[in-house]
Length: 169
Image (cartoon, rainbow, N blue to C red):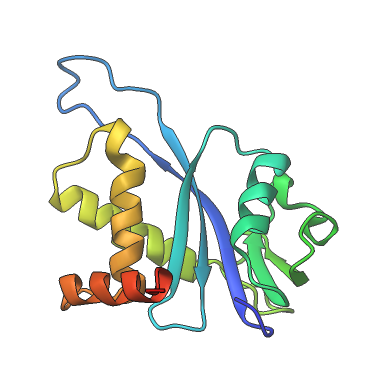
């Protein structure tokens, strides 16, 4: 975000489905909150497991990762009401009511990029045949890192990132 760029926010549920209703019961679903920066194609994002989907929890995540002067697009989930009052880096907040539209006809607000981001990550999990709940955040971190810094030349990108973040004295 930042500099009037649009960041879309949304939450998604991750859960394990039992096959054929046999075996152990599935664990309770995990809620993940995410932001997608739409200045990139495809959008690049940030994901974090959240224990609650209330305003204090979600705005704490937004305040930690959102760049100044960002525009936020979201659905009309009640935790997002009056979001600008709780997120200083947000200069504008537009919403879309999914009951009526995928894209708000007045503002053009939509959440399709963050939905696409969820789908890309969930496809990765599906290809891996799922992950243990305890490792989910770690897999999300890897997915985000590869998304931001590239799938190719991963080792070189890690070394370059270390040099940037930890310069030699």
